[in-house]
Image 1 (cartoon, one colour):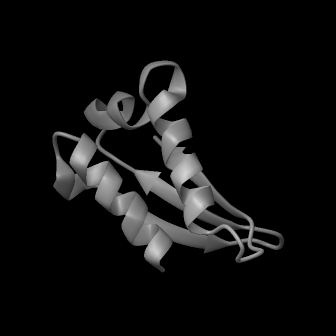
Image 2 (cartoon, rainbow, N blue to C red):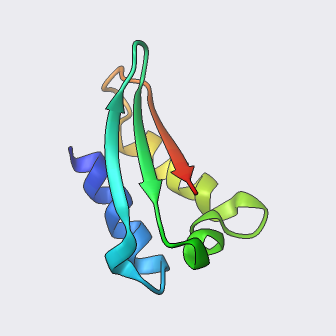
Length: 78
């Protein structure tokens, strides 16, 4: 659950419309997927140039869950 709050915290700090940030978790067979939705105008801010911001969020998520043995993925949904 703290992974959701981490992604929500980062995303709300990046976007112009923090009220539009939605984070939810989906359990699949082999992985937990964290879905991030933002306003269409803010999509570029959470992806970043050449995907650097999204990659950094995924790296932080991996570091936060290291040692748990779980496969957690971040998907940024339009």
